[in-house]
Length: 114
Length: 114
Image 1 (cartoon, rainbow over the protein chains, first blue to last red):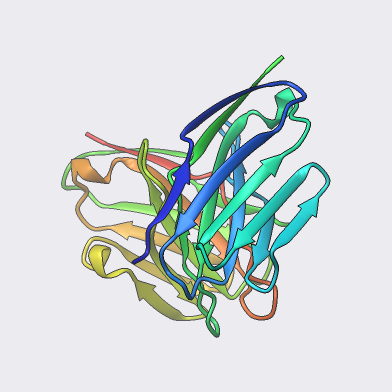
Image 2: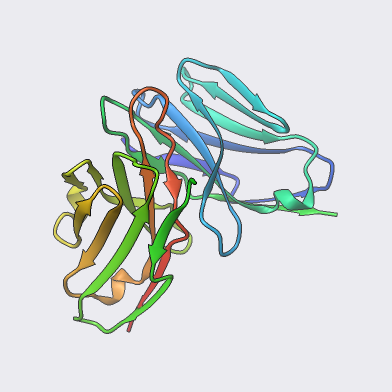
């Protein structure tokens, strides 16, 4: 299978609190998991990614966790700010040789309320 | 410069007419992708070029064509637009191999078929 499930579809949090988005994938051979942030009228931008040889990665307030056994990965934003409000997409990819195909989740709309 | 450019940003087409969308990047990336995104759906890969080799997804094989006259440019061609082609079309590029598999997205072309 090539589905990526992403939940929740809408997430509302108070400024300063944390936000978590969860994704699951079907293809056990997936080895690359990027997260994209898309603001209205803008193109999706990569914010953080993790490869299958890692379980945890952190860039400033962004933390991604990968559980290969459960085929789940998640994004955690600590100390959310209004500027974090956007659509977030997770994706899974099997990079083999010179090809890689991203399978996207449906996206999560994050609203950070002041 | 990690910019992927797309032209036009908005396109209005008549049913049965052809549509040609353009994407360019100056990052010397091996691979260029085209995704289709409809409201409340995940971005869906349509096809990608690795160098001069075109790979089209099985379920969209007959609906879309593409050309890549040089490393920097890639087009998406619809021979006869139908109403179901109305969507956002996202172009992306990447340099695969090693850890250089990040896909950079363009701003998208919003196609409306009437």
